[in-house]
Image (cartoon, rainbow, N blue to C red; front, side):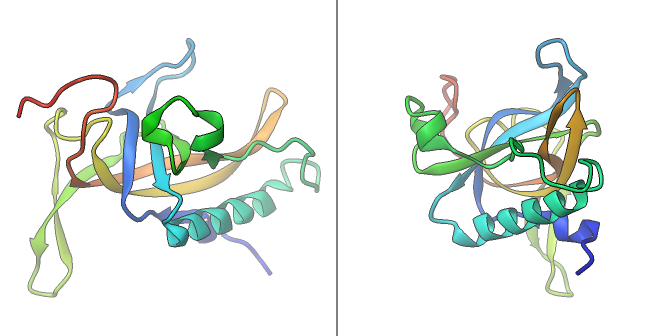
Length: 177
């Protein structure tokens, strides 16, 4: 079976954003500036988790050509268990998480009702305070293989963010209301 890039794309269900830098790119540890967010996926969202695992598997298959025709023994995968890796962080409890990045600014929008055709209409969000660490969104991602400086694995690319609900701020900031 041939794998193509459409098999590596996912639109999540309702997820929570954390460490959100989607309006301005940030440099991590002096590296290249990128737009990024951590995505917290409830462990109960079996459909989103199934889609992500299938997309990661497809990216692994695509990556074999970069990795000498086989899967490396210590392959890095993007989906991680919040209960295991962030046991002291209440926001990550009961969630899997991944970090998604992009060199290009993601599309950022919110639903504003339905059009005459019955499809959801969206409005671009330009207010940088409207999407923040702690709000809820649906996110479109693409998973891709990488081989950089001896590190091999699958990473998550950030495409679009659609805010669907406010939430408590993560990181100690309080809502004005």
